[in-house]
Image 1 (spheres, one colour):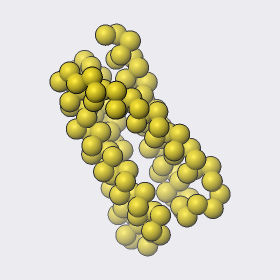
Image 2 (cartoon, rainbow, N blue to C red):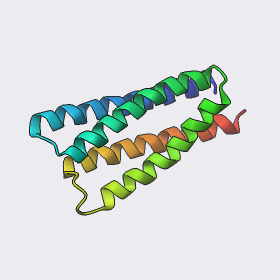
Image 3 (spheres, rainbow, N blue to C red):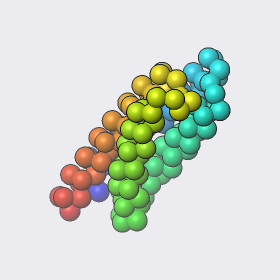
Image 4 (cartoon, helix red, strand yellow):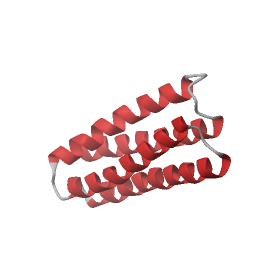
Length: 119
């Protein structure tokens, strides 16, 4: 992965991390359900791990690059299910946040595909 792709992917993952932390703060203020807390913590941890994977991929790890690509495909699909289900325990504010996170993951996927095609 070249430097341009790395910087962009890292920024996108950092945005996911910031949004996820914001979700946890919001849940603390408005009193989120257990589903909100679990999902918020999971996405926060995943975002932090993906930032580390991006660094490893930039350093040449094909495995890290592959894991990032898999997550960038799986995450939007899972988020689409969460946003689409009518009664899943997630409030509308969290569904909106998850939709933005899903779009960030799609942007990562497109960046990774472009980076992969230039190698």
